[in-house]
Length: 438
Image (cartoon, rainbow, N blue to C red; front, top):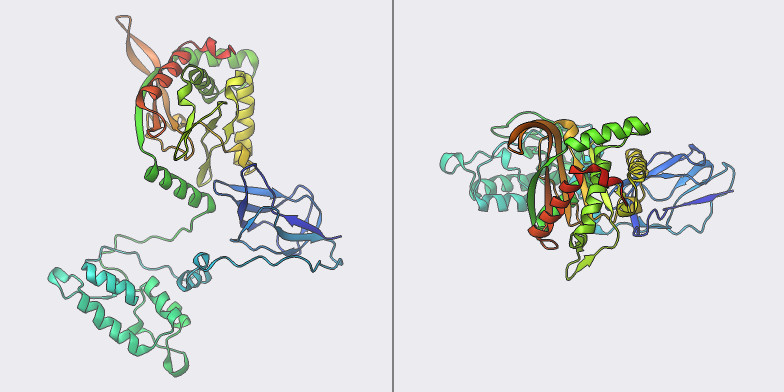
């Protein structure tokens, strides 16, 4: 029997996803619960388990294609069963999403020699515009302007020579991207025409004043998502920052005694989340989100924890922290962190946060300026806990101190609101026994 593999709806807000890669190939055996493929939503890369068993008879939606939920993306079944004929074809991506000729050539020759590193090239604005229009690599030209500056006439002279060679459009585009001098390439096409294969076989010309050698590293799906979302954050969100030093002496002692008595592993992040939940109750205006033409007031306290992964990070969200005990917060955060590291989070488990806690204290970082996770009004950057001399009641004492920096979205919250929130958090951490009270 042939079973249809559908793109699953892994969360309430999920409507589509991109096929990141098929873990199984056509013809591979598949068991129930095995990882079949990975998909990428707008925020994370997730693994998809198989709900049927047999052979992966056909991959219908290939890697890199974006499709709506419930689309048939593959077929699993017995080797002798006939494949259904009623599977609708998946539409090709719009032209704007299709790779250019140069991108396709680069992808097809990933093992080919990488372009030479680019140094600083001095060229006039008119020369740069013409070079882009005529697909002339500036690194090939010797400038005739002042101090060797490349001018428009230098580009025009080279462009005329290229046209006389009549290279194919793909060859010209690839030569532009790789920095290949077409004048030094021998054409093997009909009548000596320069082809894409001729360009691939040629060596790129080293850029002037190259800073050093390196290699090209393709973006992973996770790195691409991080780049897009954090660039959006810094571009659109007016960040403001508040720095505060917090006395963690009582927290350190409380956590040690708590773990020894209970045999559990309560973390500092668990205690920070509980302290923030108490602060939200005292400063409810902090629990909001910017929605363009209005501010959305949230009801529950949902706090995210930044989790470092291999070459990236993700933020699982602990929901309704204000209704949970320390033990419950600890158990839920451990569960979500484990799922995050195994790429098993669903969209519902990494969306809806009102605050992200990003803790780099374990790396001996004293303080840092965090970037707000889009959709949230604030993020709390946590530094290490370190012993310092502190003036207390007129005397000098050694205390365990921690520096935190809160980044706020000034469209949704003001400095006074954020300061009151931080102050209440600090007060709760100074008296950790209050963290157990509901």
